[in-house]
Image 1 (cartoon, helix red, strand yellow):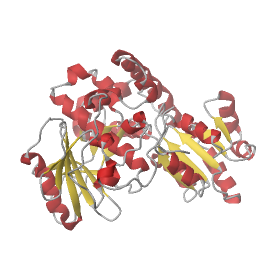
Image 2: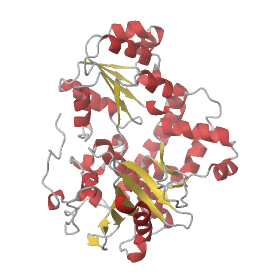
Image 3: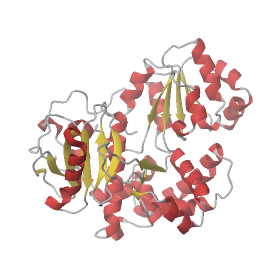
Length: 427
């Protein structure tokens, strides 16, 4: 079992919140994490709605099902019986004791308003993404904290990494079962079965729609455009799907955690910025399968840069899920073509820009987008970083730095500030 860096956050929530919801795609390890919390006595019992008998009981009499549980309980795959949410609300309103329910689900309840609103003020929601690079190694990455640190220093060096290359890590993806397979062909076989199963099962669980045969083709089409600006008109022409249908299918893909979006960052300074979201696949192992490419075929091709960019975005998204800073994650692009791949904005309004390059070296021209962002954000701009395929951390002046991509998980944190917590979460 891989230690999950979000574990301590969930334990903290169970200590003061009646209901905790753990969202995430299927096969990311939600059930395993929930069962580990039972073994450590943070919660008492476990029921799963993947069991046909349990599911039938929950659907037949939601109120009776909840009243019969007793004690703190994990309810796994709760999206399969959505009427349970109202029954849980009524039960929690009678007894607001913390840690009563840990719910897990393979559908994003934030995108299912009827469900999320029923437990507003009573539930804290977390997302369990596929494994991060630190979780594979049993460590807790703190790259987000370092980016926003006042002690940020270009003199720090990464530790020696004798493991996989960045591209190999990207192709592997983060699903535990797929990553455990010894060859790319076996991983592709797993992802192929996964896509088929999730589109047939989870989509049917949350939506009654026709045209399921069109969804795998659309998903593959989206993979060729990740990560890039989302253009519904072009996608509609290419796929032959009406925009209304296209948007509904893509909303379902997002609900079951296959894709995500990066909204556009913009200021109120009168700048003419493109306000279109950027499309991102939520796992690069899945992305590579949909593109039908392996590491050898990708290397030294234009597509390699897109896969690496998608990989970095997903690693940042994972780290945000356990970060205390929890910045918003956006992108920046002007009408004149200046862009920054990722913009992080914390609750104080501080801005960190991240540009992603797969090249082994960078120059001053690679910082033009970050300089444009610095101008647009003014005093809110904290720093800009170009993550690249080289090995050295280099200052380019004016709070601009070039850093190796593997700094995301392989950084010597002690060069900035002493550790304030254990690197590996201990329930």
